[in-house]
Every structure is written in structure tokens, then in C-alpha cells.
Amino acid sequence: MAKITILTGSGQYQDRWHDFTATGYRVAQVLQEAGHEVVLRALKPQGILEELEDTDLLVVNSGFGEYTEVSDGPREEWDEAFAALRAYRARKAPILALHAASNSLDGLEEWHQWIGGEWVRGTSMHPPIGVSHVQVSDADHPITEGFADFHPYDEMYSYLEAYPGSRVLLTHDYADLTHALVWTTEQDGARTVYDALGHGVQAFDTPERHDLLRREVDWLLAR
Image (tube, rainbow, N blue to C red; front, side, top):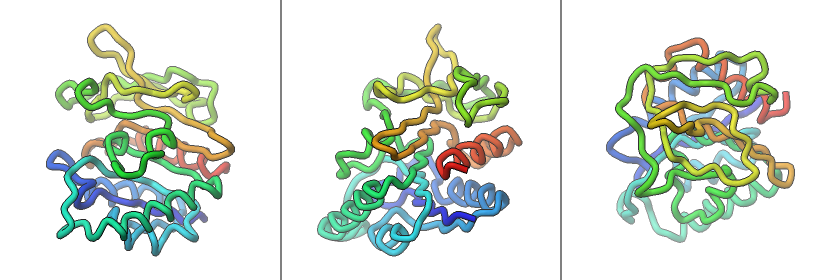
């Protein structure tokens, strides 16, 4: 059993489009059912500083908002929290970044490099939410070996930028182009997964989505 900490968007890392608390809770349920100890905390300095030291896997489920000292606290506290995140990364500990986390954690300059890509502001977008076809583009990775295409009710992020070295596993087609949805990175021995799925709790209603999450976590924990 691994300890998994889920940091959910709050304050400067939340937005008006997502209920990160609800989706974070749903992810926690899936991972608890897989036998893990799961801690759900707001993405704020206190949660980062209290949980990261003995966390086996960090899950980030957050977005992009606006900093205010009233709701987010002094910037000095964030400097300390970012130092803790860098220390977590330095010990080669794994990261799972979900959905809008590709457009999050402004202030932590290394974040997008860690997760191997980003939501490009002004370019990335998504068509209207609905039932969509998610396809396996690389069946030779442990996460996707034996995994089949599926049809979740979700947003299909499009025109994301997967950095060189990222290994794209799942995609979708939109506007006559194929767009990356899930990719992995292994930088200096540190594993990460970026998974663009998961707009709302309904996105987690299929058994395939549960299976994908479990597969991602198993690979990140090298199980």
C-alpha cells in the first residue's frame, strides 16, 4: 500500500470551470478501492508542507486562477512550499498531473518541464464536452498494454504541447488532427504521467477510466 497525496485546486489554482474538490474526491475513491492510503488536501502551502515528506505519489488536480494574499497567504509561504515540491522531485518521487494541471502552478517554473508539456494559453482549447472517442496510440507501454479505446463523457483537450521526450499513449481526433491526451516522461529517473481527462465526476463513471487511473498509478509506483 502506497501513500498518495492529492492536491486539489484552491485559491490561485482553482477556476470557475472545475470543481476540483469533487473530482479529487472521486479520484481518491478509485485509488482507495485499489488499496492505497489516500490523503486529499487543498493545494496550499500547509497541505504541501505537511504531506510531501512521506508521500509515495503526488497527484495534482488543479487549474489556473489569480493570486490574492487574502485567500492564498503570503508569497513567502509559497516559496517554502515550492522548495518542498522541488525536494520531492529531487528524490525522484513520481507525479500524476490531471486535466487542468497542465495550466497550473504558476510560480513553480519547473512544473511544465516536470510533467512534459503544457496547455498553451491562447492556443489550446477543447470542443464542447460530450461522449468522445479516446484511442490508444502506443500499446507497447505498460500503462496501455492490453488497454482498449473507450468513450468517456469528458472534455477533449486539443492543441496541447507535449514536449520532446514525452511518450504519448492516448489521443483523440479533432479538426482533422490527432491530439495528445495522456503522456509519460522519465527524466533523470523521475516518472510522471500527464492525463488530460477528468473534467467532472461524470468523466470517472466508466470502468475503463478507473482501469486507466490504476494503470497509471501502478506504473508511477513501479508496481
